[in-house]
Length: 198
Image (cartoon, rainbow, N blue to C red; front, side, top):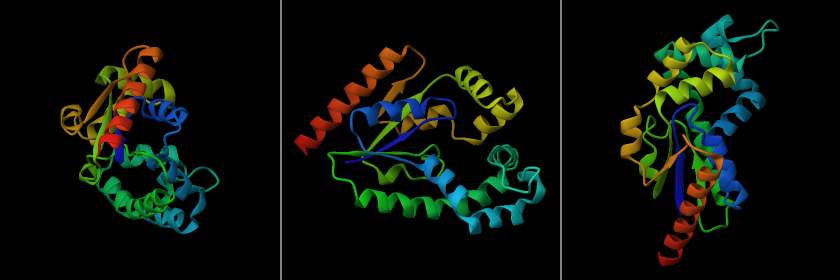
């Protein structure tokens, strides 16, 4: 069974996918793939630096992912260019991983699932949900970014309402870790049951 997991920045997607991984569920994380591509592909890095210039490099003229993220989220055209560059490579990588999976279901964690129109490719969609103010606090603390920068990122993503519209399951990540784990376990058990019935 093909299951997507998504949520806005700072919603806690990584924490949730880690809990699913503890249950031995295969996880494919688009963010991890993107990071790996940017670390390993000289061709992709050169394309990005050539396109955006010094604004996305560090003092050693190496691609700086934090500067890149800040730049693209304040520049919609730059973000679209980067997505067009990276998304085909990410999707190819996902397809390769899927072919190696032998389990009842697998989860593909895709932050921009709805923005990219990929929700139609999955049988189930899990949305990790938190209120906007919680998102802002978490990202500001985690990434040491200003409120203005964080608001720009949130504004560039699909709205909370639209994201929830596509959810088969909603995980509330505004409460305790224990309750979060209970939600994950309940979804896991239901997905196993659905697989058995299907």
